[in-house]
Amino acid sequence: RLDSMNKQVTKSRRALENALAARARYAHEVGASGVLDPASAILLTAASEDARDASMFPVVEDGLEAIRFGDDGGVRGGRAKLGEGFSPDRLAIESELSSTLRLTVDELEPEDLDDESSALIADLNKAREEVRLTRRFHDSHVTQVQRLRRTKLVRILRLTGSAPKPRTVD
Image 1 (tube, rainbow, N blue to C red):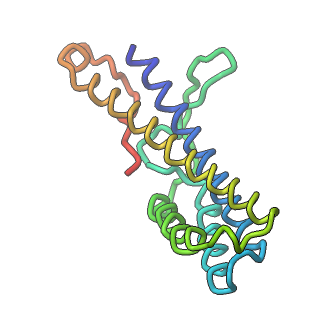
Image 2: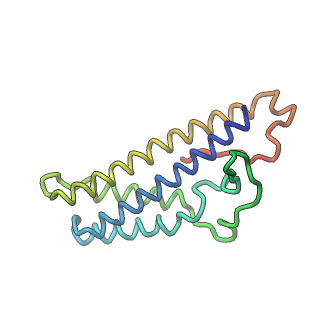
Image 3: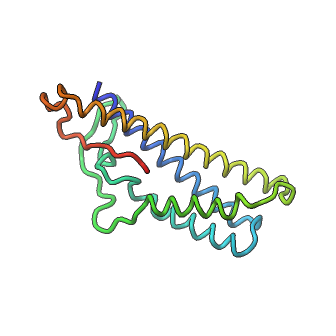
């Protein structure tokens, strides 16, 4: 059970990584589209580029990025090379993009948008909602694993092995 829950956490972490990358991509498209005023466009483009640059680093450095799944569903070992040495605070960068989106995109009036701009904003809002949902699912899975790892039987029998302890994305 613990092994399957760890796999769920890893898969939900990858889904979160993909959702964050999509949000940064759509935010960059909106920033470059001319929908926003020049100052807002510069802010949004810079924040989205920072998020895209930081996407090579893990959201939370808890060791889960080293776990790989094979085609058969089995776990492959090995340490990930990403994040060694200097690693930016990815959560702070993603939070900065979120607050920039709130300050720029959320202030747009629907009547000021044409059809193409409305479609871009709709795609961005879908990506933002997907980030919210995948983060909630991920944190729920992590909480379940942490709760199971604290049980006496798991601790006494050392069932966690060398699996890293997952952390929530706050």
